[in-house]
Image (cartoon, rainbow, N blue to C red):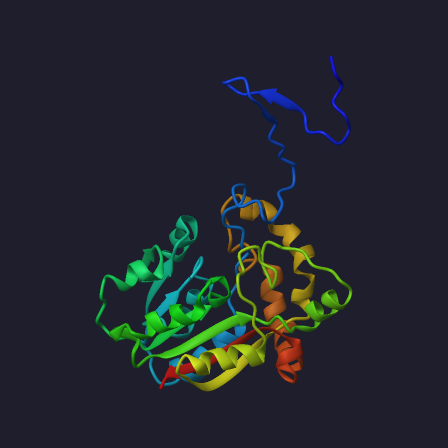
Length: 284
């Protein structure tokens, strides 16, 4: 019997006698192994979106109609409801578990893709459209934005659009050192298809016929340790509790004591220090 060499995969015979490799599944899943972890996010609200919402939407409307596309588990929507309890929030989310969690806070949740929701021909107007870290997942973001802009219900809405900042300081440092690797979330999220800097996202939105009204960024200093912090919530994610971080006492303490200072520092140079670049826009 021939011994298997160290560089060969062990083989077994299939039903028809054809040998094939034994499937190898390491204990720790690789981020690109979609079958083992289809939805892997540890979610929390985006503080820059929250700030722009309070400043531009809630300040003028106590019961806005909000369309949150790619709403995830509803972390941002929970903040909207805290600020404006009478807000009517419609979420669109393709993942079943995330849509289930979002249903606890959203008034309506459509589980599916945007193109399927658009076929419903909703006519009641929205005051706000939210795209929180969505465009980077879209192969053709220009066609995506143009199709959405054609919907009568969003024609006169304001839009809040957030994207990860490829130019954030720690990604520049990693690139300089020749370090690259996909991750469960963040800039190198395993499902990202497009990458943006503060400059490039502004050019894209302007190209798509949007007027830029305001912008903000999320802090990046603590977030740079996300791969380490994530380990504390791995079990929660595997059990389907994607909001464990947002509900933790540690995060509440961070929001109160650290995030305000960190945000002020990062706002001094958004292109370098911002983790996510967030714009408030409207269609021209």
